[in-house]
Length: 115
Image 1: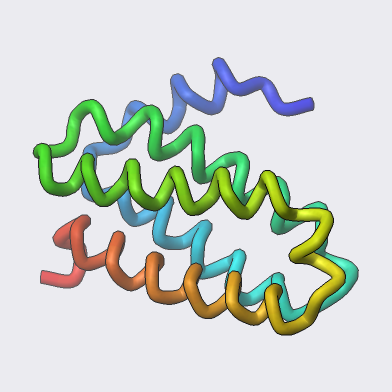
Image 2: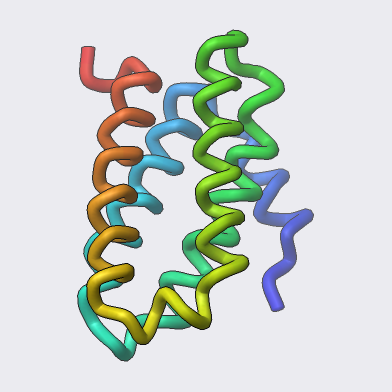
């Protein structure tokens, strides 16, 4: 089991743009890992970690960014809730990958790291 307190302490040392970049990177990994059956647990872990990252980040973001992060967190929670149905269905899993990719790009844009 992960030590979320230690992870949070380390995560919060980074500036907001870097934290947003970390969320974007996790979502990109979800996209990449979702194409292989053996990566189920890795994807589950990335989704869970991303939800924590959003929780720890949204409060420091401006209102518009926070609203988008909460929307993303809801999406991640929906996937978690339906995961046992999503993972064995390649079409649904591809939708998760595609949506993760779009969210990754959006969060990266919000981070300002591309400027």
